[in-house]
Every structure is written in C-alpha cells, then in structure tokens.
Image 1: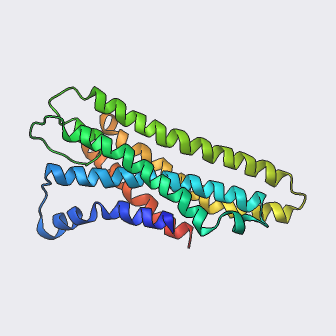
Image 2 (image 1 turned 45 degrees about the vertical axis):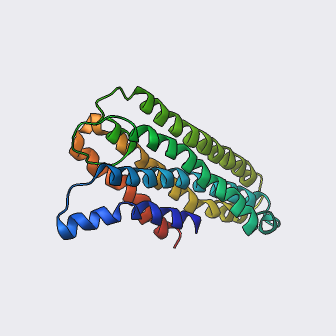
Length: 223
C-alpha cells in the first residue's frame, strides 16, 4: 500500500502539466511550477527507495521469523518506520529546492523538471547545488541499498539452511516480487543522468521511462 501510494503521487506530480499539453497545447511551464514538480518528483522517488528498503526488511522477518512476523511488524511499527522515510525525503529535498530557487536565471528551455536540469539554466556557478544533489543521492541510496543487500544476504543464508526443497522454493517465492520491484525501480533511476551522453531529446524520453515504468509495473508485479 505504501509503495502504491508513493507511485501514485510521484506520477500525479506530472499529470496536470501533461494534461495541459495534450488538451490545450500549453507547452510552457513557469519556473515555480517546475520547482513544485521537481520537489514532489524527488521526494517520492526517494521515498520509493525507502519503501523498497523497508519491504526487504519485511521479507527478512517473514522468512527468518515466520511465526512471529505478524506480531513484530504491526501496523503501528510499519507507521513508525514509514513516517521517518517520508520525513527524510522532505528534509533533504526542501533544502535542495531552496538552493535552486535562490540561483539567478536567464530565460531558457526546460525539457525536464529535475534538479540538475533546472540548475543548469542558472547564470551562476552551480557547484554547491550539484554537490548537495550528489550528497542527497548518496545519503538515500547509500543507506537503502546496503540495507537491502544485508537483508537479502541474511535471507540467502536462512534459505540455504532449510532442509526441504519445497520450503526453500516457498521462501524464495516470497522475495521474487520484491526483487522484480527493485529492478524496475532502481534501473530507470540512471536515465535522467544521460543528457550529456545521449542529448536532450533522447534524455527526455528516458526520463519519462524513469517516472512511468515503476508505477506501471509494480501493480502487475503485486497483482
């Protein structure tokens, strides 16, 4: 449910402007609108990473403590770990948004409202903003990915220790959907960094995949 909510909000942050383009041919976006869009995209992209990390911990508890996971992972516990994941994204991205807002800008064309695409329109040195953006990525992914890796390492050893092949298969099937969700969520995250390699237009199409692929595939995976 948390993953679905995250995907819905992340996609919905671009829907109003997309409808204006398709229905009314209003292809311009104001700077403030772009900042709002950037804010929500980055918050819920970071939150999706956090939710996937929490789901890895859930898989670990479900496999390693099958008789107790319903008492360990109560709704209250899930809320207590889910709320900090949301707060983490808000605190990190709101500072980034203020940095972008306070930069001086010349008029220019924005093809994608993400952090570096907007920052590159500034007429001032954006080194501080670029470093801060990199730090955000390292803080979020640098925490979530190791947690996921550790969880699955412990799951692997727990599954290997099972004597029954059927029990091993059942344990692995618990994780299959989550592993697919991780692949669809983390793989497209590299696409927005391609402008310098592929050019602006190709990068735009890849950035659309970055926003649309995980929310499209996750309901199929968890059907």
